[in-house]
Image (cartoon, rainbow, N blue to C red; front, side, top):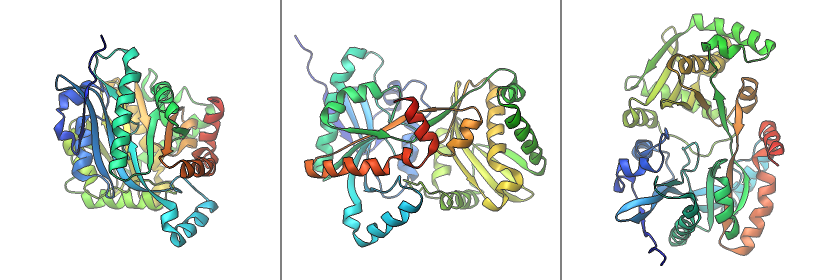
Length: 381
């Protein structure tokens, strides 16, 4: 006799699920219940949040976050083509922007698809089918024609392909995750793993640290405006941007995730010139956000100094994995990172539009604009 199907619940706040029940589905994940609660507190504008849970005896056996937004089809486009798509968007905004429902989060590193520890692998496809049924019903109720899975991890992708693939969801490369395994021997041990030229270059850059004061903190109430200004400056210098974070977001994450969340501040005399917000577990340091004052980037080699600061931090505390953010892939590969693929999957409920979007996807794929992402796709082909 087959067991009864789990009850389906769709919540507007993660408060409806206990922290213990949610985190049990994601053991050891730095972006747990408290992270999603912080996003609700001060997350990016223009998004609505939902959480789908499959319940047995009132307890979740499968969960996933969902966001709803208006999505521009040229979000991943970079370079000269971006100017063309922006012109099209101004002339025909309804053509370029669609209502989107997506599994995942605009601010999480990966799509969080979680199962309770007692769920056997053999049952996961059935539960994911039921979860996708609930997701697609939600998308229809919210009048979202475009449905997506944002940043499905390399580990979860076989399950997504098996279940979402047969529903017609089309995969395309997402932003990969940079992962660095910390060797023994501290910072010198790490430098020894790099090429001679890179090692020499980093040691030269490291001398610029003498002109900076580095401060590790768990709160930024006195410098919220300065941190926000550095974030805005970094966004202005980035071609690729999906979400835009409000000034209070960083303080909210630090409050909700303390002491796991911390921020490193870089001062040149009395001026804050860079920050780096991170989330820590005993085995992993996640580099979430970096903000820099661009006129001083070259003078102090801010990106490389923050990288070495984080590697040293991991080495001192015995943290085995440094996970860096979704950008600057060329330098990260040079610094010893492995790029772990993430995938987007999408489907439009209208077949004609779905066929058009599959053609558009060939133009806006990330591997068309980033050589490291393209190289990674070739390796995994």
